[in-house]
Image (cartoon, rainbow, N blue to C red):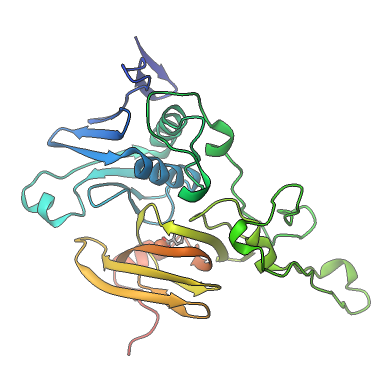
Length: 326
Ligand code: PHB
Ligand code: FE
């Protein structure tokens, strides 16, 4: 029996208990340890832990900015309304062998399919957003679901965390302090507003807020000024995607250390290794892909420019791919 619900095409559970999903010429199948992906000119295998961690981010971030590489072969490119699903498209060897494949889908088709696959393939013990040190294993035959974890609320403030009616600050009741941030002061800023402005000034302790994050590699929007978004995140282990930028992103390392592998966005050729320590600031160019390694839980501020015009300006050469020329 196969099921088609509102554009999600999937099979009955296979011998491991997991449904198989198709998107155009792509097919996705999971067994106890791996995701198997096939397309008309090839096939690929990804360890299920890495696959689910990447899929979780692609789903929760609504395909993010630009390219989300699950690894060096499979990924998506966001065209904001429609999405390319590709295999080998940004991999020199696949391109030269003409084995790469791309299909474009309406976000309303690929989004629900990815969501259904994430929910069906994530067992009760596994949380794809958690640090590997803080979750059970994803492996084995089908064993329940973890729907609350894979559909958890993503913080996206419309103005700022703590502003009345906006995203709320975190407390012991909702978000206990993470084991790695036990030493982070939990003081609350004192507001001294000019008379008449008492109801219009707001502040929160960002370090205390981040010390209570229960997820890793998940930038949340904590403040917004027009297109300028502050998206801090807490990191531990490896960024589960290799992000291909369609705009410049600024990184401010707020604590500890992350090492970044930076490659050419389209070929994957090595471009730089960047070690960022607390206080370091970097601009990631608009034509690269990058993956971060955080040996200890750290705090990173990702500063995004959400302007819808940027991808076309950069692609056409009208806007530069890095903010400074040395
Ligand atoms: C990024 O691709 O820039 C990125 C994504 C997730 C993070 C940090 C950085 O947690
Ligand atoms: Fe990025």
